[in-house]
Image (cartoon, rainbow, N blue to C red):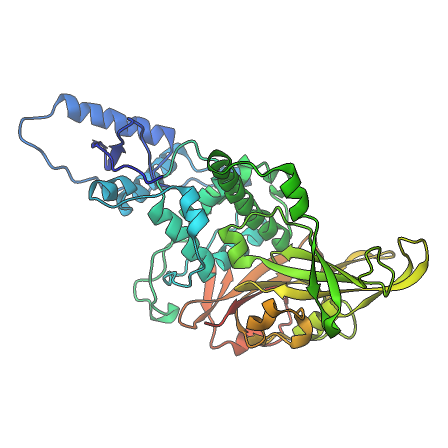
Length: 495
């Protein structure tokens, strides 16, 4: 349903508040939410209201005062700003942002979050932003590198900015992670100037407090607080969490607008289907995640593996092959084998047939079965997780330190793809390297994380919390490093 334009508006302090025809107040994602800030704004509003003159007085909003931060007494204190600092930061955001309500008063129309999620298509139009460091407030480097990588992931950033422009925020938000990432992206100023040519310098590093608070609402900091964590696990939690929030919004919307599917239809949809496989032989296909909901997250990062179990002449329905379609958000690649020294080797290892010894058919007969996984759908942003940490019975968890060679541009070999018409469009596709997250150290429970990220325009930057350096070329990213090893690779499809 299309949102109605507001019928009237009031001004509280420096912020225009729009009230719709149902007398409901709705604010954009970036409206300040600090209670003390709003109490101060209301007092100022009442003071001006009671003392206003007949002639209209146009007031300029006062410039926000930059508070002097006291030395934090703990990690938690650093992540929780004082009320005065929070109010100043909220006031700064309010003055910098053209509110959704003001735009609506000018005739611009806004839609619902459900409509945006239903109709959004992958875009690569996110503007370049000026680099900005993130404060490491107590073993938080694992979070900082993931946030920097997502900020410069063009489809992801474009999606956040599109939602910001199109959707009016309600205080009854059930999407805290999505909202926090939108506010995080807004902290960065649009600027394509190369790092070394910036004359005024970079903005001060900051703590991503909005993201922290959203994670706290999800209770994730019961385990993350003040201790080193795995960057891949954190990214998985964050991206999957946003996907789940979107699914919840879409399912609630569809429950109100779409008739429920009957149990018989659901059973029929999950029964599987036949496809023609190699050598024109039938393959019984089954989607093990047929209930998965399509969201912008699945459009950006979501791919699918085809896992095929082959037992010649042994399946109950007479077909020699049975395949499952298994979705993924990133590919986990085993790099522990001595035969793996490149990304190509690791992908060869992923799709290599695996013999299953001692397999028993449904008729109770022993048989030699093979299982093979191949790529059936490849996302626009292909994230490769190099499994650096492996468990050994005698040593426990240890790190695989060896250098794994990765290319600046990745082409998908035919052997990695399923033999179906759906994969034809990937056979000539090429993916360019746009980000690398590194792990420093020898242990999974410690060490440090940094990242190399490519800005729009081709400039490569190295991020180490608050420190940012410009790299000469992609060659500096590809070469072996003595103090760190590549852990997560971001490849974006070439357009």
